[in-house]
Image (tube, rainbow, N blue to C red; front, top):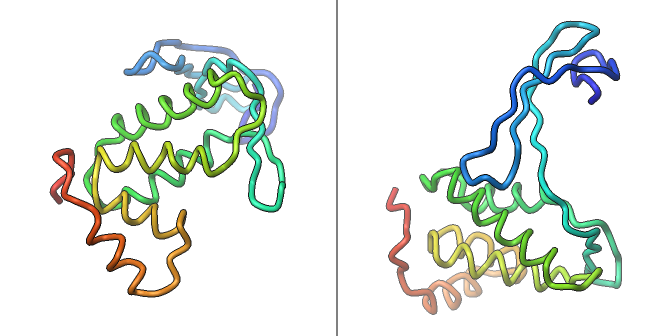
Length: 156
């Protein structure tokens, strides 16, 4: 594993343990070049999945991109990180086990919307505003009026 500090190619694993949701292995490593310590996460990847975007553009499925989108929607909402990790892991698992090598981005967006609706209504509306490309305040009003408060709101 390459060191993020000095780019040395070798590191030694000092500690390994499963994450809280047991979806990954957390490893503490020490660089053999500079001695710096860093953490890596090892996850199971069931298959290579390509995301088909608008205009037929294709790109590999990127869990980090999904994590960032969900985190941005839930920013300052008091939603526990563990809950977001479970949502992202669940979406990734659904995408990888669907049996398709290509998944439309709209399908992933719909899965995120379904998950966020259960977690926090404000995060749900935030994500929807980008996903559905709201362009005017009226778009927000119409969508927000159709959203009923969900029991899982963070309540911040």
